[in-house]
Image (cartoon, rainbow, N blue to C red; front, side, top):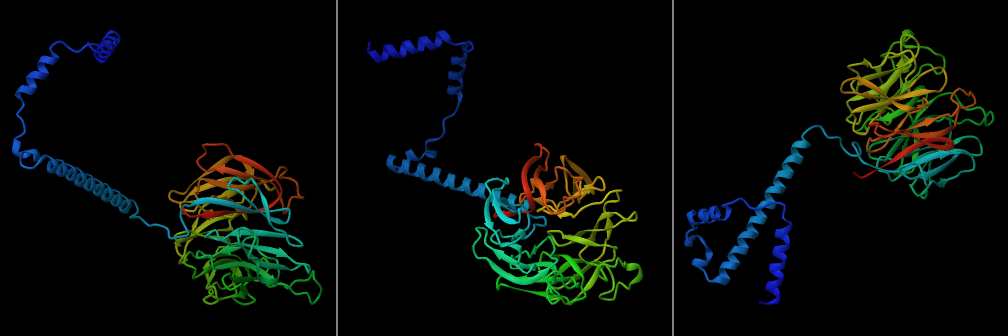
Length: 443
């Protein structure tokens, strides 16, 4: 007997001795009987019977290859069908919808910094001679718009690349600029509100007319639009870039409301207004007194905004882009803050202020059913929250001492909320923080 045979027998005896089960009695006889009773495939059905063996092997290989190709083709067809069916609903055009979060640009201590997607590893991008802020990423993530204070105490509207290069001044000699710089969906235009700076009576005496500023980023220019009596604030682009919605107060700073003005007359009523980016087609959209801080839904069908409630506080409203279907969404004792749409257009985030100080509760409103639920764990300021591009997190601002009246322009901390509530809010201490914008990367 060979050594190989001895090894085979030894291994068989080893496994049989340690086996926990035995084959049923009669199993071998049953298997042999079944084999004997089963009809064999006719010889003519095999390639070997009518082809040389080499050819038969080749035929079998080609048959297997064809089968594999057919199976892969069917799988691709199924996947394409599922993709078409799954995307048969209304899909948001670029740059709307969910996307990968990129870097965060923030204003800290009067300078502009770039941080990673969690707010860490900050590097300074821009430090002008005075204050710089309102830094905002373009929808395509390739540019940053910001404001920069100048020596004469006026402000310049500027843009640069995310690495700090390509700094371009679109317009200078501005004052009273809005905190928010709004980008058009194609990342070619920006809009904000400001007043022309008039230093004829000295650097601390600006003119009083608040106006809409539209900047052409591609050509590096900007201009006032809509005339000197627009008195507009917080302009926002429609998703198709054809209209600007903004809050309007007429006359400026007097507190006059729509009760004493004809809404159909341009320049006569406060509320929510529309016009084209060149200033034409100026008309009222919603006559809610104090209407402002608008936010256009990503699909372009609705606009969320703030307006005065019956008890004098600030409430949240929704209106169709055509001015119809005006809805009052909230009616609470406290003030609601600036609403911000989620990237997929299904939710609105806003702060509900809890007292007369600057301490609020971050709320998420599901626009499909009208239900609002709080994100607990940290009190936030009244400032607009910032959605991550994938809609999984929200960034908001904190004061460590919210009742301190000296807190008027800078925050102590930033807090990142998990929208699903799976993890606790993450508080990141950043002294001197003023604003934040999240970069949107390709999905």
